[in-house]
Length: 69
Image (cartoon, rainbow, N blue to C red; front, side, top):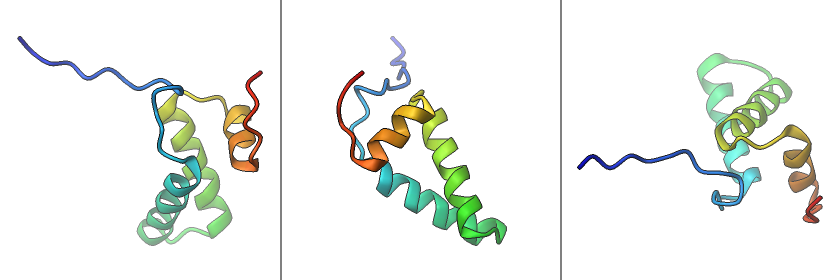
């Protein structure tokens, strides 16, 4: 039997988005010599794509708005 790992949904993924985005942005800045703002925007897009989370929801989490719609 082959074990298949399915992508995690937003509810299943518990890693805080801010730390992930900061690490990803730093790596993008070092690897591609891009400006900080652009690196953060790209990192947020990557996080959104990875977790299948809408950008609006991600923005709410980053601002500290934890209410569910």
